[in-house]
Image 1: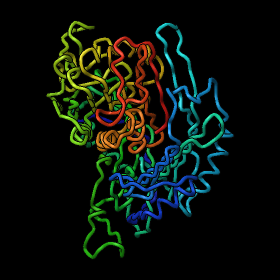
Image 2 (image 1 turned 180 degrees about the horizontal axis):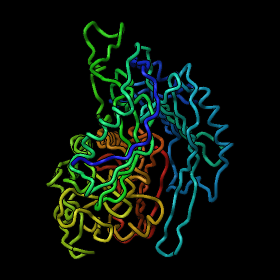
Image 3 (image 1 turned 180 degrees about the vertical axis):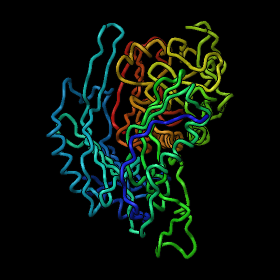
Image 4 (image 1 turned 120 degrees about the horizontal axis):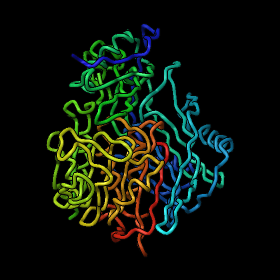
Length: 290
Length: 223
């Protein structure tokens, strides 16, 4: 008998959801040099396959050719992780204020990302001759997320991170984004149906109530944005399920699974797609479990 | 020419939840990184003893001198926890524990353990210091991580592009995880040996093996 899964009570969710196709990206050399100039440095643009790269020896800009995404950073000239790091904590409020200035300049036009978290770049140093490791903080990472029409963008491909060093300066940042185009609406499946599809997924195959326990703790609706190097034509509406799976061998496996929130075969991307070509809509990303 | 091996597990045969993208993830690394592919063991052909040292810990039946410690870079994709990582068959007991592992006393310089929590911060030195016998870097995560298909290829692409090993890992993790996930790495220095600026073979400086580490460095941050 298949494994029984404990699910939270099904919450009401919208019966329809807006669809967003992804506009193709095309970076021209001038776009890259202008972005580098705005970031405060100049240099030749090198085509490195997946990226356009500008490197002036002190800073580096990596522009992802597939998406309107980029990463910026000061070159690391230290001898180890302790270079520029400090003992004790850093001022999170100050870091947020510095990050807001950067985000105000470089967030995608028309977006208002929200701070999701502030995390430490933590370094621990253990010398063979000392009993206790030393703890250092190399910077604070201010992490932002996006939403579309109040629905969260999930996954790795839509986020901003600004790193503020102990001196209060931006030492690095990235902006991952996909340019959305409204593409109609689609009916969502019910949360109960999403639960059923998850319960039938490969994650749980071969497990029974005698051998495992599974519970889903959180469910939310979102749009899945893939890594910035990957092609994507539709921001896939998904239910994100977070929970714990336990077996004797692996007593605690905290999982995140994505279940398509619409029937992908029914997607019509509207007037932007070539007539009869709905392949982007039918494509189920590898991150989507069911 | 540098040597590379991968092991991955999708089917856990009822021992744990199955995974979907570990094969693609590990093979993406193997097929992209410049170097010579030596082994690609998956599912029931992926064995814990490939990672373990003969005569170390219990059961003590390791064969790492033939497999994992016979190449320069290994990528594992599957389930993990702070002191071990898991396999779908028992050879010898379905998990490679920290107490059975000595790495780097032969060839191994870098290992990526794409598995949840192996480099969880609390107690990381006590758990993994004994494993460093010449190993330069252990790459992993402080938190859980996604069952995703692209990170192995991304890591290899960044290594091939000339980033340092630690910078390549951080980039690959950021490209493929939400900011709720935290990358981590653990590296070793020796007397007059620093692995901080290690590159992949042929891509930049590569330190000598820190056979008797004087210092271990641990770093983590949000993806």
